[in-house]
Image 1 (cartoon, rainbow, N blue to C red):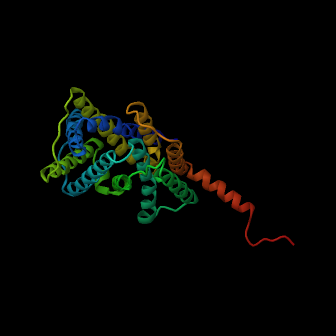
Image 2 (tube, rainbow, N blue to C red):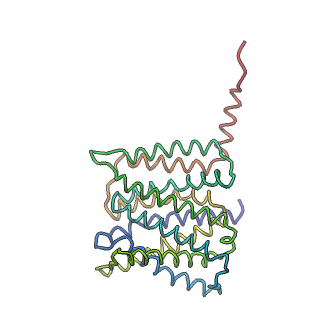
Image 3 (tube, rainbow, N blue to C red):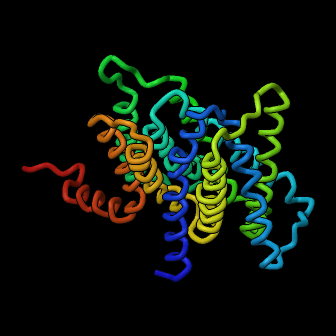
Length: 310
């Protein structure tokens, strides 16, 4: 395996694990009176100085070309919408389950690449979609008289969709491909911050942490699931492409669920675990797409059509 691919896979795995820390830092802030819009505004704004410092140390220019302005603006809005809908979903459902449901985005990426960019539809992709659907049905099925919030699920699906579009656009946009990783992330966070400012101007209240540790949580959100995760994701897409990067998001729900149980004390049922495992398995199938497809073809050749015993 080439060094660039090894680096790309490693960065994608790190990005997924880092992004899975979102609930552990965000939910405690909600418990102390902060709302999602305020949390995300501080998360994005506090991440900007770190990116700016990296750019300055590397001698990167902050100027954008004319054909780069609109694409970076679209990416910023997509990322902000994905963050907002995911963080809002934590108010309606278990954050570990929400992060597991978010894991449908790799399949969305694969489907988009097949439908709009002529990637070949493989047998393994079809199997992946079926197993993924079974996992989602288990997660959404009522348990102990309680049903998972439909609105919460809709929010997570919107988060997954906007994140999938973001990943595909970073991969296919010629203008975006030429932008250095840190510079692209700087403008993604910058444009995203403006969306949250707009929401506050339109009536959403601005809330602040009521404890000193709250600012530490915001700082952690700005660094780990923002600067580290998004930076690694962007670079991984440039090295190995959008579909493999999305697939390695398998570590994201695992990290989120583990932290939700350990840090937040949230409970998971056996049904939640099975549903989550099915989603992880479904997407992991895509990693082994080539050998899976070859194995299926070998099996099919063992039973050729049109031959009958005399």
